[in-house]
Figure 1 (cartoon, helix red, strand yellow):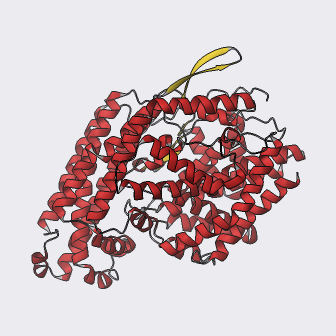
Figure 2 (tube, rainbow, N blue to C red; figure 1 turned 90 degrees about the vertical axis):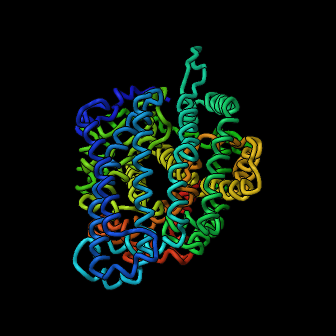
Figure 3 (tube, helix red, strand yellow; figure 1 turned 90 degrees about the horizontal axis):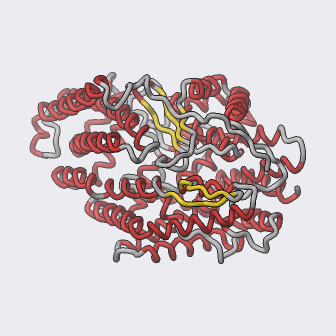
Length: 606
């Protein structure tokens, strides 16, 4: 493959938010946040908001509405400032895990987050007691009406709260419990470096760079990178197993005390879908496995294998040697976005021009990619680890989709913007399809078309087949962890078993990836379990929406932007219905998967 100078990769700039972690403006903002939190607390006390049934007869309808309106105004203001400050601190923590000042400030903000969480729980418990008053209040002008969806959902979920004292204790223990385990996992793998030899030169590479070598054109490099990566995880497997045990044990305990059926119960409520919808989607995905396995077997044959080993799962196929410099990636993305929406293109232009992106892989920086909102500026920031591949160009487009989603929600309050993960991937998935289809349309040869299809199919295979293996893994981990702690060997065994269940004969069963559990941060959260199936949902939902766009053309865009604006104020089923989509029926999921099957068919023909 031709070596391409990627150019100077950007690091994000947040100087328009605060000039530094030590600046007076930042310190004043921290103080202001604490004062706002105090104000919310004082307001709840003065309005007699709490989970005490005896207080209820003393409050008439006007007092209840006044209490709700006052809470919404104050809590929205406090959350907007908190999320801005936290995003600013995270911009340092995620790009330099050696920055102790940022880590200390992160810890300070987490203490404020605990206070805000306790206040939300107090309000939620109280709201459940006055839920019978909501229907009439939601018809009256004011904050209550404009936050109707949030209030109704909050009241409904109040049934899964412990006592106020227990919820308060759980929030405080989170800092030294689940959150501490999560931070440890992030620190361990962001600082893990490995010596690796290329072209006679040994380099000490961060584990993120080793993982990226799975895309390299040299099969020997891909294989050695896989072997080196597995060996590296061996050196840190015990502390990571402790992290995962701690987090899952923490979640299991709280779910039991809150009356949850299981961890999936909470995840489904967060996703705003029911169990039947999830099972319908997964049945459709399982039914599509033979098609995905045909693709994987065909890829193995193209690469000279009888069966595909893990190290070649992300290998490029075809003779398209195209690598993108940063400037080329930027131009390509902007050009394609403009064919769909000027608003999308303008948002991306701002992101590139104003240095909203941090694209350079380096020691101490987290791997992968994400987008975070900076509410006070109505902006976003994007982390990636750019290597010039079409896959990384697609990743940039994906994260810019999240930024566009944030853009569409500008003007909404923090509580109105709370989007379930099932809908959070809509714009990002849509953008990936835009980029892939544009690349396919401009392919100058069958070999180039093959290479582009390969990039697309690698991604959709990950989001359907691999995501299913991750779902099965996490489900089994929760079931086993309820009985006892699990060893690193246990985690590896569960991971391998479920990779075999999902991939079947599509991969060489001798060479799988038993340490996928070690580095995926999605497993290491106490507040968001099963951070896997929303990706499959998002991919198939976005694919279905793109089919609607192809049918409707430009008239689709404004409705699409309205959907993104409203993701915090409706269920996925309600929003899908605007486009004639019924997510509770298999027909929709089957139709989206058939679009992918057609791409696989074309891949097999080339």
